[in-house]
Image 1: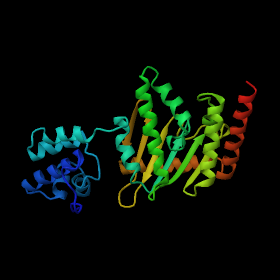
Image 2: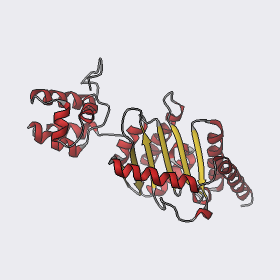
Image 3: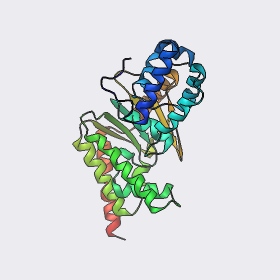
Image 4: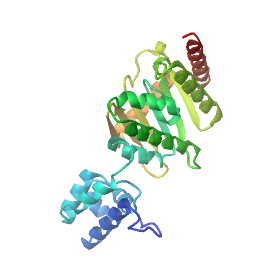
Length: 281
């Protein structure tokens, strides 16, 4: 992979990491493919780091330092390049979202971050960060709202979401928050042709992703990946056989869920239920 035209190695920490990796590799007389073989990845993967397309990985940087004899140089640069506004465990997935052409999510208990209102997001984040200062919560909310803006970008991905009915019934914030959130979800589904939402009803019973929050991301020129998340941690999975298994399971979940049309009707009905509950309390 060639160096992008005009890329300034001093523009940010990631670009500098890439330029240093390229310099060390060339001084060692190794091609991207040969270096990739030495650190158990593809040459194109090395090229993505050199071109500042992908955020560097600490474990891989350690292997690169060992192979290239660079001490801890790349590891130190990696730590600088990995500074991010989102939780570190989510940072790689957040970056890949910007490059994905398709994203298929399953949300077991809450409306996915893509389609959250600010009030709903604040209630979810405050519940997870119960003892955090207000400024920390405000920062998380602002970052989540910035993430939502990807849906309005020219390169917005096709977003397919399966949300469990539990997310429509679980009270997050007050009834007004829930009514506004579900109304927003219904409107986003109806107004955006690139968003498909299905509801997994209680009547569907057990299914492949009980208790699992995940996103499958597809790309134009790279293999698919899966991101799974639980409280305070997440995992990015790129092993092809395991990714294929997740895809197969997602197809089963999609088949068990309600149709998009029936799902939209249920979301709209749940929004009205919360509005009525608000007026009766």
